[in-house]
Length: 188
Image 1 (cartoon, one colour):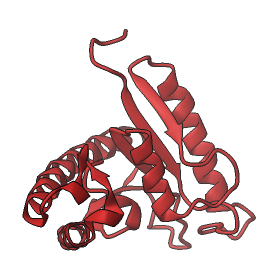
Image 2: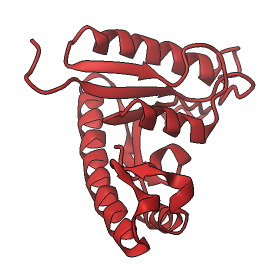
Image 3: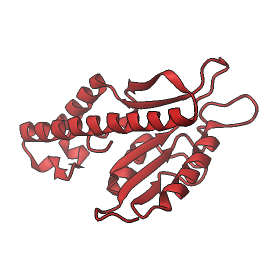
């Protein structure tokens, strides 16, 4: 049933692609192929619901640079950016799911980078940073960053709770890191 709010705009980012195969199982399976197949299936499921509009950063075996993945999501006015990866390990104890959000240290570094290079960044959270004074831009980006971090963590918790109903999760399923695709201050 369609809600009264506009559809949630979701960008799915199947990791790796093209010359970048990601990790492999040693039996001919490449992470890039698993990521793409999973993203396509997830997109098809989500698109059955009129409350979602879904975009993929890639829908073929092509490589898309990390900055272009985030830029694509921003151009699509994404409400949510989900980067999909399928890690591989020979350790039989290492199985399950993990959800990553941006670490606090990387988040502060990102804030500093954005505040000092406002012309290159452009718009964040609907605000043209180049048109703002540095102190105002810093405050606006920090507010967007804090809200985004809270929403990212909430989404990660929901994903892990749902995955745990169906399969194993790792001992530490919620993790923080500084992956490039996590650094958008205005998009969980």
